[in-house]
Length: 116
Image (cartoon, rainbow, N blue to C red; front, side, top):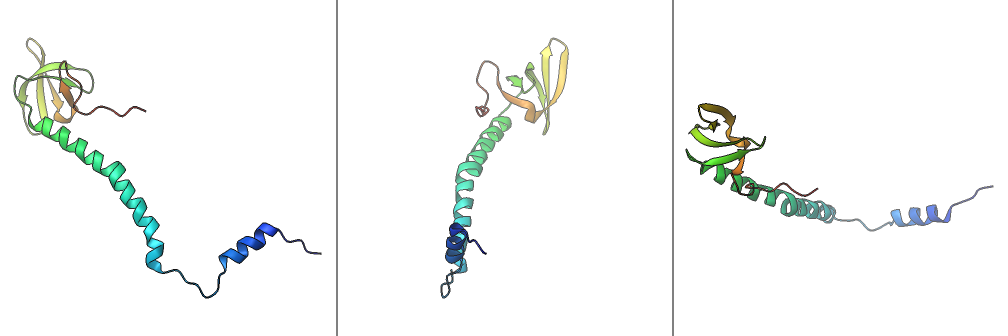
């Protein structure tokens, strides 16, 4: 006594269609579409934000009043390639990473964090 599931029979019939072969290039189209969507939705906006932040960091100069990611407010006293020296109080200077600066005091950050 054998029982066959009608759904199994239908799936088996659909999966085996003799005489028809799908071109390998046609099989790559969905993969290419996913890559294109990934590029335009994720990578391109991320690159634009990164360029905006880099332009901001390259434009920093001595005397600018800035805010860091840790919430430290200060005035730039010295700038090197990767390190910025902030004056946070009279005779108090702190060395921080240039990448830790998020914006000017009293203004919105250069790149807003995404709302999650």
